[in-house]
Length: 284
Image (cartoon, rainbow, N blue to C red):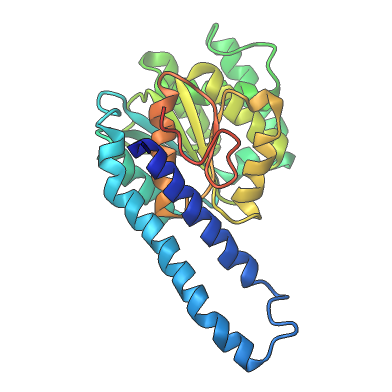
């Protein structure tokens, strides 16, 4: 007998396959060798595929609360947005955190200066200064961006004067802009946007994961920009403790990202989504 869990996974697989079919069929080579009759003949199947893909999002949205089971209650989430992160996607992810019984403790908007390779000296200098001022808050032997990630984790998940000092220093250097009401979070959700140098993204996210209970990085389905960054991050063995989810621009991906956050409370890491090596949806 097929379990409810297996039924969901099967549905997700079908919807994702249909979505990929639509993308492949709509590329720049799709019109070669076709006439009007052939194009007309394909209209209905394409529309049907789109309806099925839309149903996948509707199914995910309708079943989300049941799947979550309120398991983010008492586990506040810190949201870190990379430069260019889509505001609508971030808002939708935040809404799913609420549907899972959780709340966003604070939002940290990473500024372009932090991810610009030419500003590495600024990032390194600030990290060194904070390491001198504050004792044992980060790994002294860590590379520049991993150390910055560990400091950001302290700002995002820590309490007390050290965390406040780091928040003020990152804001003062125009590296990170924190929301006015900043409380410590238990897990961190990173929302990707514009392209980020792979070494910088790997350093920041692994630094976050070294200090936070769990870290999930969410990117779009697009193979470029955040989608490409997600592929590079998944290929880096150093980022094994970082959870990743593609498709954050869809309802299905947003539900998957929230399930990944729940999973990270006890089991960090894992690659999920249409291209996830650990499966489409983290149900355990």
